Image 1: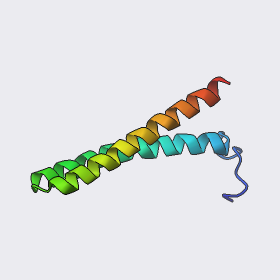
Image 2: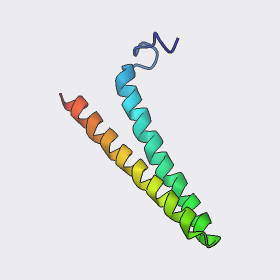
Image 3: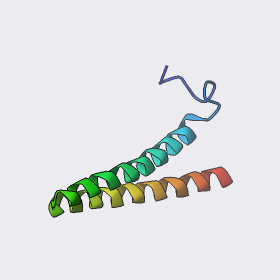
Image 4: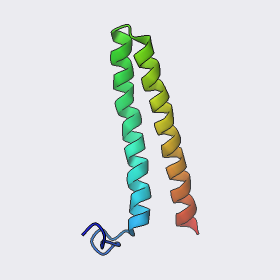
Length: 76
């Protein structure tokens, strides 16, 4: 079914839904990583906290790119 769903079931074209899903997943990851950063800091593990901060930054970047792409496609 994944190969045939083009919006009839969800009401949203697959490619638009995929951008929405990706953006939401990135934003969710930003929030989750905040907890991981706090855990690492509480344990005094600066290396791990920095690792999670970099991952969080990448997720923020992905979310911003997803929002920009979605906005551009919805206005055209």
